[in-house]
Length: 489
Image 1 (cartoon, helix red, strand yellow):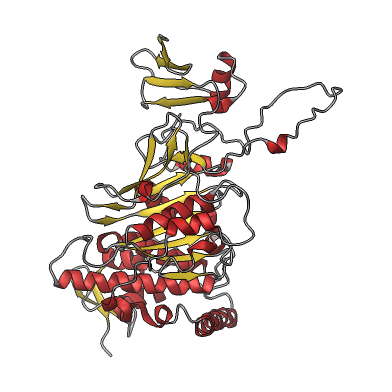
Image 2: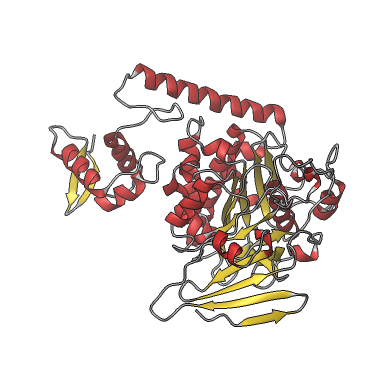
């Protein structure tokens, strides 16, 4: 293995490593630090080309121990729809895309991190940028509004509860469908800035909505999948900020796999199960590793059990909040840190520095033509009493559905969230009832798998359609080769 040494300014050392042709480079971070006699792993950065070469950068101290404050200029989109959210370990800017002007696509956003990793501040940066760039933002802060309180009044819709989040997702899905019809009638096949505003739906603490046992898990999963699938071409983006747990706790790994591979994904301090999932889903190539992010930058010093405790308090060591990896960026294994936003010390109320970044202008609003599609919940979003009435109606409907499932015994089954689980026959009949024309088995499969229930295979759908069509007085008829419709009544 050849190791040419390149000395960079300020005592930074770079090692270019290469394995022989025909081999793939592998490395062990702990072993590498040991070989280089580095007892502070935050001083070292490793990036590979995924094949034979690696670049190891060694700093005299952690280059991300301190970062500058974010400015409004950082958050103005460039011609590629990107904003500056942080700095890489080499000082270059981290650019995150809010919109893709080359394709007209709205973006999907995922922000993961353990408690105290800096998710709320990282989300504030993006919310401020959305307001500055005229993006209409709908935000559900499921920590009862505690995570990003400064956003209230600076977004078009600010929600605090799971019921409000469901109403928001339903409204967003309806707006996406309404835009799709309008754009289709106008001959448009994509979204463009300057007509309708870009709409971003953000769910903070999304694990509360999507984890096993959450009351609206199935409905939320379905709506998020629907927005991720249909919203991109009509300017409706979806973003989740959640604890870095296993993806099965976020509506199931299949729910987010496409968003992980195609969205703007930021990983702050993580759990081991999350890392295994990311590698298993192919977001990180096999053999790639991310340098672990410690909770603080306190040095790890091995001391005798009988040595007197040091006078200095290690709790005073700098934290690593906001440090992470932009997995969807051009350098997914390069450690970065978000720019500082807001006051360093905790505030007794709203943070004046964050409010100053938002500014005093009105946030972008949903276009008037889509208000009817957004429905009653959007119209009443600023009326707490009326909104609570809608939330209570949603809770009552949920309770009624749960009671109906219990009365039906075990025939329908139960979901983890307490909702009834319809049979495949009922799901197929619902799809055919909603269709204007006969459908093929493949068409029925796509619609069934988009209804929020358990995913099924095409063979199961074909068998169900055949059984329904062959039954005496069946509810389904064959209208042509491979086509099915409801039987006329």
